[in-house]
Image (cartoon, rainbow, N blue to C red; front, top):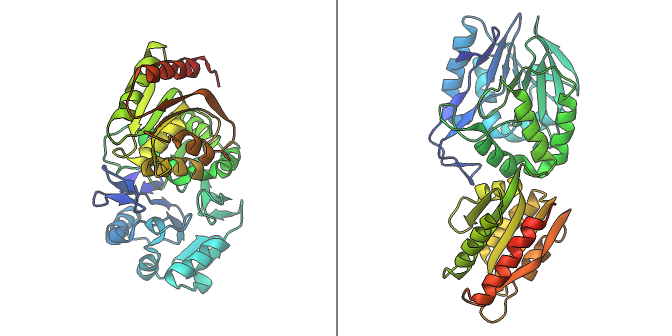
Length: 388
């Protein structure tokens, strides 16, 4: 438990037991499940935590409120890592009410079988709840990234409780930069819903925000323009960094050798940044993050069963699922007798918006030879000449 402002307390928990968030994202530095308490004439608790930390969370609340008891539990998002202790909260504080929207209460019934009766406070979009000096305004944010999501603005302390927005992987006691794990979190979990995030950012632009309190990751209090700008870039599907990300799959090392040669040629051409990723060995979420971060992408795959290598297939499907667009893309393929990987990869992305395809396609027939080097040099030059 710690102070955020004079009246707002952090009562969340750190989880260092978890290895995979949502059963798929590696979290080597754990995870934070954030919850907050606003102490006023009435007391509101903002969201719950994962079921495994219910007792710790309730103890944190008790330390924040002392001999008093909370009046409300505001439920902004119904994923179980934020809602799983609703039942325990109601049992501990039988006089408290649950604040949510109509979709929130549908999900509470679905998850926990609760019919709350007069313990339910249903709010509308832009509706308010007065705690005394603190007036909370609820702004609906459907599909950021569930349909019931809402965020809450506290006018007195100019704090935005942003649900999963502005979240990141990693426990709060992890010593790591915000952007990398926030970017991986955004594109892994929220990235499909860029239009909805843009709509929320437009609503937030009308608010005087001094503090952002997310449900994962640190409370943001300084240089908020930096975080808002990154979220605008990510959600508008624009590149954050000028450079080339090369994603490859290689079995016997020949495609990898070609990728290394392309990397060298790009650096010789003055490319400001080149990142390579072996899709079979690196974290897929981080690979997807890097593809969205850079303005240019090269896909390099062996031909496999008449198509592409399975890890490349997974990677491209991950890009498509998250709305990959507005990028320059180059292709490299390898095939000992019938190379088809380039054609397959391009076809997989045919519905993606505003992709500029490089005319130079590198085709490797088994090993890297002199003609391969010529093709690679041509692709490197074209990537550098392109200003997309």
